[in-house]
Image (cartoon, rainbow, N blue to C red; front, side, top):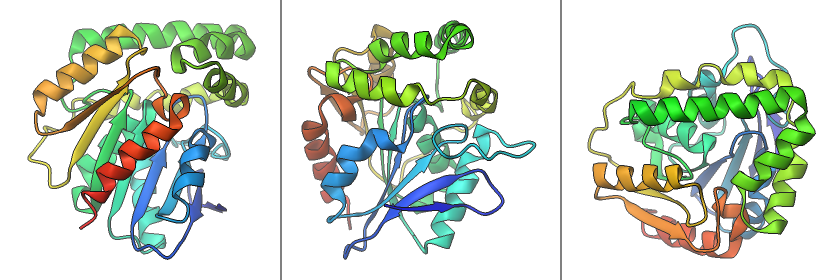
Length: 263
């Protein structure tokens, strides 16, 4: 993967080109970085052109300026597509990455080949009571992080992955998350319940792991009811970060989804 930085932004992204004319963008979960997709990148590197970003405050996207925040991710990603001459792209978001992927799709639907969101929720119709519960949970996790990133990462890995191998990978990446980066996520709610879902011009897949927390499974079920035309996948023996828990199955599922929507 070639590492690049978007001008006039903190955003660092990674790119791998092959002979394909199809593109995919991977957007990672909170507190880790693009390396959570290393098994996907390895599997697809000769089949699809790949983009992966480090979300602001994560990985190498930490050279921030005044006013930089997570709600600018979609315009920054759009600039990357312009710079790389990419007309359309398959979007894959995990957890926080699914929020950003949806926000991009809301703003730039003509550039979306397909949208796949795992461990997420419908940001266009998110129940206010669930939002309050989600915010309370985030505040609790933030408190642990301010006490000790190591303690935070130790607790976070248990709710972010199911298999021991995936938990340890998540833990190692989480340790590198700077405490100050929480402030860049303060505008996250500004992307929620802003747009009304229109008839999508691209296919949608949603899902999570069967071992994810009950609130996430409920969020996926509610989303499926709101958009019955979407594809739903619940991965067995997987938690929140399904691509890390069951990478082989995840790769097969997403490849089949893309192959049916590449025209």
